Amino acid sequence: MNTLLHHLRKALTALLLLSAALPAMAEGETAPAANDTLTTVLPTGGRYVWVPDSMLRDVRGVIRGEADVHFHAPDPAHDLVIVRGDTVSQVLRDRNLARSRFDRGLFNYLFIPKGAWQVGITASYGSFSASDLQLLDIIGDLDFGLSAFSVNPYVSYAVRNNITVGLRFGYSNTRGSIDNMQVDFDEDLNFNLKDVQYRNEAYSSAFFVRQYIGLSRGGRFGVFNEMELSFGSGNSDFRRMFDDRPKSTHTTYMNAKLNFSPGLTVFIMDQVSFNISLGVFGFYLRNEKQRSYMLNPEDAELYPDETANRFTSGASFRFNIFNINFGLGVHF
Image (cartoon, rainbow, N blue to C red; front, side, top):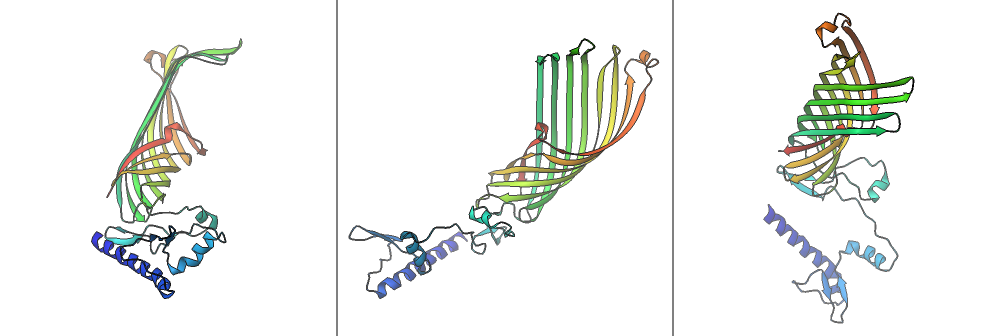
């Protein structure tokens, strides 16, 4: 195939030279030799460049300052590449909603071809800690720590060029603690927190649709927007001191989320990509059950167990450092 393309390229170059040389030969000028290039030096020291007849008027206009050079969209019929044995266009046809977009040279190039599979994994991790932190004159002697991580394997399939659908499974774990925090608003309102611990563990499964936009013909860089519908369940424990006695609240919950996440993908190898995504906007539904109880059996008689149910819903539009996901994908 490479040899055939090479011969075709040579044949097109010869036809280009011939079509440019015939008008000059008709006027009595000397045509260039077979081994001349498109740029030829004249004996007088000048230089001329052979161009197709169809471009002669435009080139003369640019040289004389009578015309400007404009960037035109590449023709999908001629910007071709071979994918899985088929010849397809690298420029995807999109409906032109803003003509100025093409004037800036922005195009949707082929990035993930139709029929491609991808398996991969994304992960995130974040950690904060502080010791003897002072916030204004209200909070003092603050010692706390927080860490969270998540792992999300996934598989996807390209139903169209640059559009994939897939399934994702996730696990997340969050832990936090406040060893000491002193709050002092005034003489009548001040208290001290210590030995506070929080733990959360969750599992989820999701269906997602991802649309890519290729940034170059080489197919190395691309951006995407992802829409995800996920369902999950989990449990958490919140322990603190109540009347100098240890108390815990155990929560079990189920939720449904619709998330929108932009991101960037880079092919670090021919079939291996690195991607990063940001969860910035979404809707959620959440149903939870709680049970509060004293950790010491002898305190249970004084403070009986308490139970409650709660249903919440809402939307979030904010940047969250724990929603930054890094991942690797294998394409085949």
